[in-house]
Image 1 (cartoon, rainbow, N blue to C red):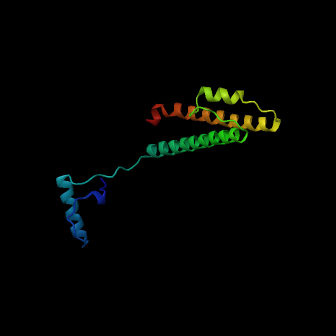
Image 2: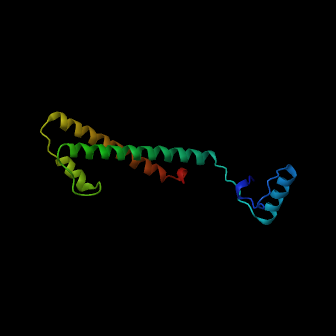
Image 3: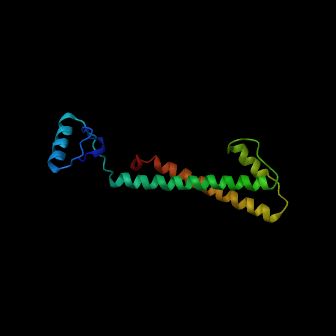
Length: 134
């Protein structure tokens, strides 16, 4: 068991540190329950943490793509009236009329990136529900 030294109940003003005093304080904390044990993460905990951090990175990338699409639309004089990205917002984007071919290609590339990120995040969420991730 590893004790979190910051949670040990020690008298205020005692600044002299010796091995004997520290041992005495640890014994007191163990006998009275005045401590909190430190949780040591397992390899599984660490791998799950890494997976969730990776998923969050993709969520941030998705958010950035949404902002880029909105900025693109605003630059071309159109703004969606709704507040959130819903199915109606996506339908509106697909009906967005652009006459310039390069602008249309730009929007299509943004939309492909959006759909790719959405698919990845859905796949990651399904993986989170598997028994190894709990």
